[in-house]
Each structure stands twice: as C-alpha cells, then as structure tokens.
Amino acid sequence: MITVEDRVRVGASPEEAFAFLADFRNLPRWDVGIASASLAKPAGEREVEVGAEYKVVARFLGQRVPMRYRVVRYDAERGVAELHAKTPTVIAKDFITVSERPGGAEIHWRAEFTMRGPLRLSEAVMRPVFQRLADKAMQGLRDAFARGEHTARATA
Image (tube, rainbow, N blue to C red; front, top):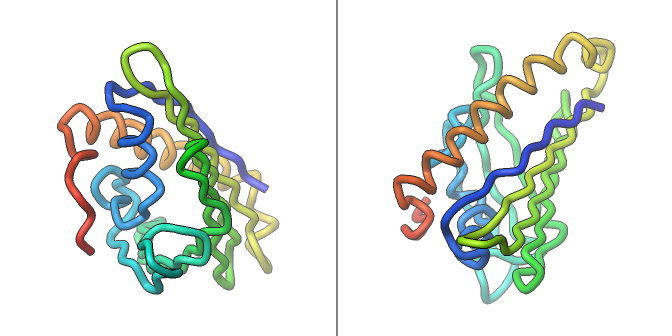
C-alpha cells in the first residue's frame, strides 16, 4: 500500500474548509491531478453524505483514469470524511479531517492506494510518483484557499 498525507493550515473556518473538501466536485479546483469530478449519485436529501458517489477522472502518467468515489463516512460536526474508490488497477481511500486552529483550520489529508493485479508489484517504484502528485495537490489546496475558492459552491 502507498500512503501519502499532509497537513495544511488555512485561514478559513473549519466548517467552510470541510464543506469545500468533502464535496469531491471541488477536486479539479485544487488538485492538478484531477481532470473532472461530478456528483454521480446523491445519497438522499443532502448532496454530500454517506452513500453519495462521485465520478472522478484522474490524470495519471499521461492517462485519464475514471474512478467512482463513494462517501463511506461523513461527519460534518467533527470535520471527518472518508471516501473510497476501486478500479481494476487500484483501490483508493481518502481520509479528510479538519480541525480548528488559531486563525482558521488545519486540514489533514491522507490517501491510501493499493495497487491491484500485476501493478501491485510496482508499489515501491510508484511511491515517489504518488508523493509528487500529493505534494502538487496540497500546494494547489493552499493556493485555492488563498484565492478564496473555498467559498464558491460546486456546480459540476
């Protein structure tokens, strides 16, 4: 398994930060590794809650990789969300935790990738590639909050 994680401090309130991050339609606004994201299936009355699904197209090594993420944990009060995706080549699990800090919020993002099939033998080689992508994503996250993009509603 490949694990990448980072902590990012932002000037937004924990509630604003969590709402922006837990709605995966916002991924293309800050993660350069994501080509598109849309709500595939709302779970109920709210758009973002356990059971909701997102169609995400990731950019990876020059390819577009379609993924379908499902919200498996969502607790806005605690600022915690977990989303999972499974493709023929990878199982991805994203964990988001947002907590209050002086002057704003701290975002802790952890992603776990388990390669499947013959690709599982490549995890050691792929680890630095995933880390570079994560580093770019976290910088994009910092930049999106600095630009105030967290206040605009997702529309895709």
